[in-house]
Image (cartoon, rainbow, N blue to C red; front, side, top):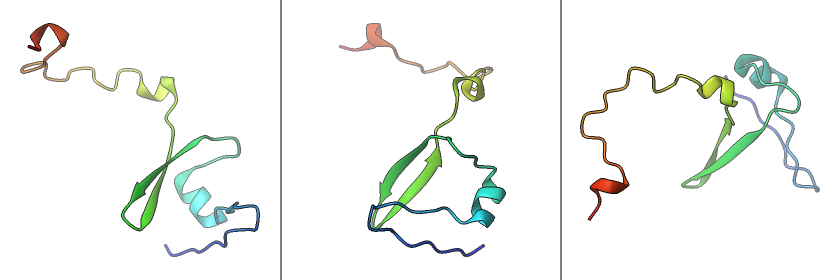
Length: 70
């Protein structure tokens, strides 16, 4: 998919409809901007509900906490 947008005089960009629909993005959703070289990675900020249980079943071997530091 290739879509373009123009930066307005108020430094705003409208995300093309095809991109919003493909990514299932909606109005009011929060995003993070991560600089990557000469570009920017735009990612939606996950909700706490989406993060719940993300690490369930993760291997804890080799995990270090504050007590392991010297």
